[in-house]
Length: 119
Image (cartoon, rainbow, N blue to C red):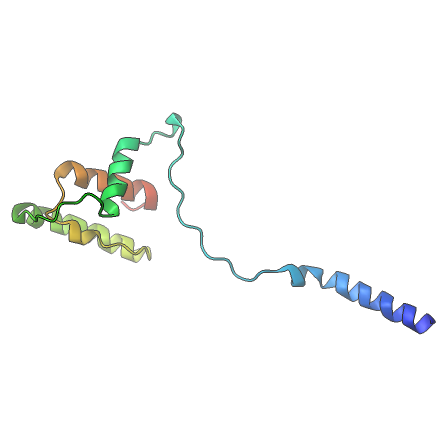
């Protein structure tokens, strides 16, 4: 009986000592970037951010390509694409060249700068 009590107490002590290892869940995936705060004191232009997000997700983008705009926007969007790829962020914004206007391009650059901290 004494041997059984010692065996149980030793088992209990070992179990308590190993409890932190038993509760560990392993590696965790990296959290995605957080969107800007909703309060007005953050200094974020919400309309530009929303429009840039819409352009980033390629929603509401016309299918018609303007060749003149494509020549001017192509290098800018390719540069942004390269910077996002360097930060290991998947995006395909270079395909927007010639399809968005100057205001949408400015909003897209603002969104990427604010959301992903890419200059």
